Length: 277
Image (cartoon, rainbow, N blue to C red):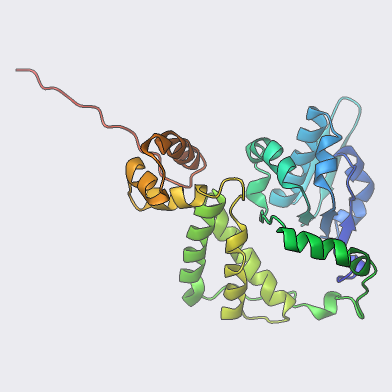
């Protein structure tokens, strides 16, 4: 928020509801980025029905640029081509991710993971007061970005497809959804660099995100999906991971979930037909 002009964002802080978004109706219509600094507190402070409605509202705005609130007392409509930046702790993400995924929220955002090392934590504590007071000379405003980037050229589409496959396996998201995500990242990077044309630098930036796609609490998931996509059996996957054969149950659970989410094809067992006579 310190880097960009206030016209770009709306600070929702960490305690709001779907109902309270109506107060920001005019700002949302200006196509802003919603900033949520502490989603852990946001989700922890809400009852289940309020949490579901809130995540549903954000999902609708992200996907369809419109959200219609209705209950027995009142109704209102919010419109806006929004984006979203949200911080959440790993523990809270693990606790909420199945519900969020079920509500299609995480399918609409780029989820990046990072666990601070001990050295990084020490550096953070040491520099926290200094960084809190950090100021930037001139903030980025609309004149500093390109608002009309041309569509991605056809000769770059093979890179989109390759990156989408990597994103799909590591983040356990659908291939089509990952394609849309990568296209958005590439175009946004070009816009921030004030270019109307996409170039290889934009794809280099996207590739830097790959190490942060894997959930740090499920390191083997991406590898399991990639190996299964290559046609390896559960036993072979266990061998590749250096696991005992009884690890096949965990491999099966990952493959089943990946199939349900469209990351891997659903394989059905063929029934044997016995001919009589």
